Image (tube, rainbow, N blue to C red):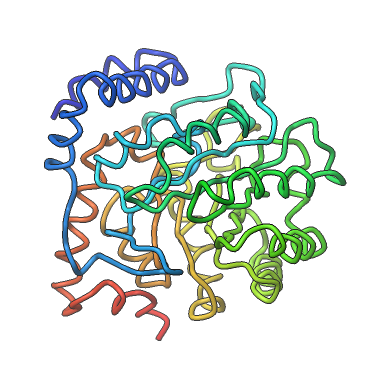
Length: 352
């Protein structure tokens, strides 16, 4: 109810200013009124045994996680955990601090409940974020660190950035997400190739023992995505996030042909992409569905199509924090309606 009251005010602000204001509010809540987090947790956290999973040795209280991009600098971990997420993904962060791309670079598509962003991995850099994480890790929820290369790092030097980030955060997170699919860092998507991933995954074993997920673009041809993923599995990838933002500008009714599209506009595209890839990968690896998930029905469909976990971000902007509670609550009901005692019984049921 509270979000419905402040949403019109937030939407009058520049999207980045609104996000900064929310971040400030959550951080202030954590520091000034720590007891308020218990109130939030009581209101938003769904404690249901049917939704709990142990995956890769990690305990997930529910399958709904926060996608990368919302908490770029790991400043909101405690208050976000009180909103009912099952896991949090931080970043994308880079080795060196960077401002990102020129503004304006973030646009609300209000009628379509979507966002178009060209942020460009703006973050405070590994050193500062690592110090912040060191104060809180290990944490009550699984924490993932989403890593990318700096804008000024050429592709032939990109591995050095990723290896350095592995070293910096190997004791400060539960899993890594290798972001090579953002459209907002020039030439980054060119790293979605076997040669790059072969070296990255083989050498990573000398640095870390944490799970590594690869985040894939939904604009890749299905056969190319499958070849890439199957090869990455052989080299030790623990799973995949399907998928990142899209550059399918035919979905838009504006003239902006830059940045990535997220939210309801790419729900169908991301769902089809996930389903086609999962037909082959299900049972071979762990799959996280992302892109256009804004309800329990959509989350449940991705789960039945092979998703072990799901992630939200854009829908949070339009629907507010009750979204996570509502998805988890309704997922429990959907499971019971279909006769499932546990979410694991529903994962991939459409493919069995």
